[in-house]
Image (cartoon, rainbow, N blue to C red; front, side, top):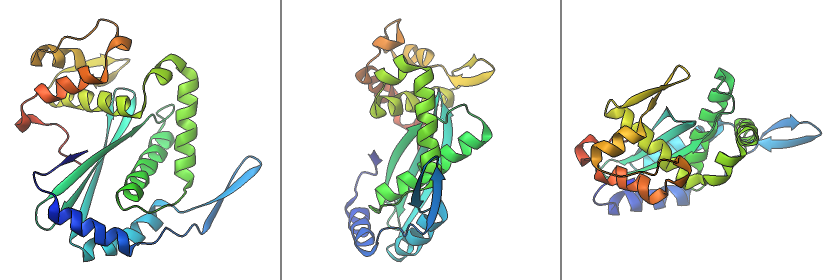
Length: 219
């Protein structure tokens, strides 16, 4: 998570907003094979949060970008005082079909908002996105087993940072951030085998970049 220099006012406003919110009503039902479950879709989440956020001087902006094998959702919560906080959430959208990407993006938007505002819900896109991640993990078990959620988010941030610097590479027709070129540019040495690259290595790349060129100031 990243924040403005001071967060006293946004912290107080967020606390009031969280205290005024109840959990999202799960008034829809979906079936998954022999099972069924109740859920609240993204519209229900937005309807619950918008008024309370606005009443407390809060606004939020969300933006999704591909980075390596992940779809990264950046969310910036902004207070009327100008203070802000920013979080990142990433997931693999299965086979990257339009439907998979759309479901993953909806899941990430909803997941971020319920975490930031401390409400609870279930949704069908969440189930689809989670199944897509499982499918992807089954196809690439070694990669999936080595990267925890924090590591995936770091990889995504470094990939986005490289693209912002104009350092890209073509992978099967898809333009991706060249993390090795960025590491060389900022003077960070990386292991030849990507499996040996640590979270500390990736964070060093991000920390070594000039602050004014930060690529992820979009929440």
